[in-house]
Length: 395
Image (cartoon, rainbow, N blue to C red):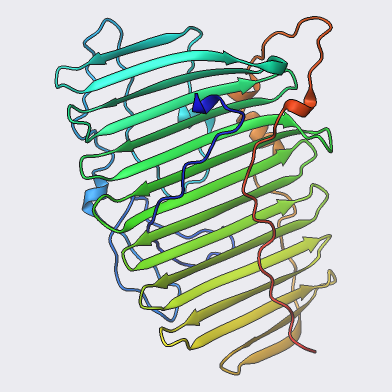
């Protein structure tokens, strides 16, 4: 079964959405409506103003749309969770997913009084090197198939200490709106450092059935036992004539060095484009910040402002910048340097929140049989690496 391959295969990228764009250097976020999808208002071409969404129809996505799971068999039907994922909410916790795998194989289905159907099955797959995958599939649909939901849970382990807990769900409603979400967390031993690592990730998407609208997000986090941490996200959205993108990342080496960056931009079908990007690097109080804000008109006219800061660690900061309209500055000021050398959520936090992952029990290893560490494949993530940089002005 698909859920029990060595890695979870991502669904094809097939969404489009829409946004609310603004710059927040602290949180590196685009504040957006918590609705699944929404409707559009005009935006200013001069700045990154909110593109608001407010489709009343999408507010109804969380309802059951007539899919009543009243069981007609002796066992109860699985409970539908046919609600779309929420935007810009990061990676959910184990408790939020509520994964509960059975210790026995089950295969059952039924039809409810209103004609809707449901199914549920669970099992276990075994492989080489002590590989075991316990899984469960469940789902249902209304009488004509226009409303449907599916959900899969799994846990994997082998003799190398590799452990994985994951879930995937999808659904659609009678209006043609559809959504999909996957989540997983992994524990394994890094082959280079021999340190334990925990990685968490989530992908979410939703698409309108009646509008050219949808959105997609991919989030990932990586931690090791010495404090090394990486975090990042890719986001995309579209609503009719407007589209937006955002990428950001954070890297902490566990010894005091930190790199943070973000790059976000938006455009309309008329040709207007605008964006903002920045980056900071620090170690032992010494480092730099730099960025750019830009705008391109439908006629191709470009405006931009670049800026930078050099922090020397002695209370002095060199600030410089320029724009295409002729403004410029190049000064040294007395200013305190502040940056976060450690993530606000690190190794101790992720271990404390991964109790279900850590409690996965592998198949018992026979005496005299040793694990093959070369066969345990670490999870694949789309780490984009450091973001774009802006060079200092010519001296």
